[in-house]
Amino acid sequence: MPFTHLLLALIANAAWAFNFIAGKAGVAHFPPLLFTTLRFALLVLLLLPWLRPVPGQMRRVLLIAVVMGVIHFSMIFGGLAAAGDVSSVAIATQLYVPMSVLAGIWWLGERPEPRRLLGTAIAFAGVLVIGFDPVVFLHPLALALIAGASAAFAGASILMRGLKGVGVFTMQAWIALAAVLGLTPLTLLFEHGQAQAIATASWLEWGAPAYSAIGSSLVGHGIVYWLLKRHPVGVTAPLMLLSPVLAVIFGVTLWGDQLSWKLVVGGLMTLAGVAVINVRWPLRGTRP
Image 1: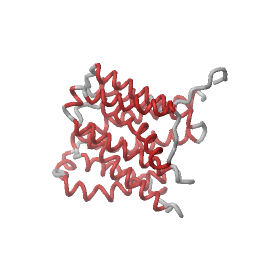
Image 2: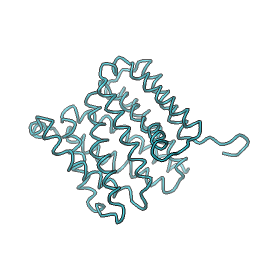
Image 3: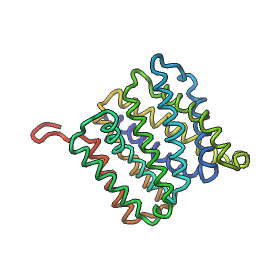
Image 4: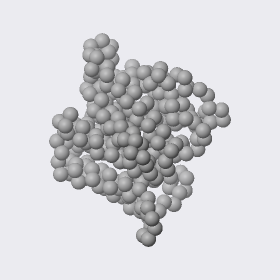
């Protein structure tokens, strides 16, 4: 991969990593469902030119949009609101990788290689270790929500395998629309103080949903989609392992997270498991 493409991968990782900081700052002011709604309201406006029907695939597109927009992202930002830190959330979101392996076995009857099963076990064990960290142990709802968000993402990933010829921005536009339509009544029913939060938000607080929509969705996903069109998945996917590492660094340096040995060990185990699943090692005696 050329150096410029590696630099783009680094930018995408940083964009996704900083989204955890933006999200944590956003839900500190806005209720989480409202924050998610505002994020996607901006995104759907930006992606209106790509909001077009997908003939013959709309049922699947809409199902993915609901699972991702209404379930996955509301749980992610709900988890950030409930969490005591950013780092544990960033690492726990990697659960979607082993969960995708298990979803493939359950729904598609796939028979993964032994190394993928080993990676799945290591990743889950790592999250269990993280769960006993004092900061995480005091906020079990956060870990439960992130696990639920990861399961939703895994399910959506299985559904996405059946899509053909649907661009990343078209799919994101439908996800954004589903989120706005689905989460608006939910925030009105289950949250309070929305009007005050909107009226009192500073430009910095408005910047949180704006960054989450533009920096994470448009820049981050856009770059990765561009790279995937030019390089194999086996080359591009492992590069994205840097995102949770950068998120932990941002959490410590920008948000004041305190790293305990349980979070470090559990995080390394989780990332190692994800790496075992994603990285295809060359056979001995062959050229990489």
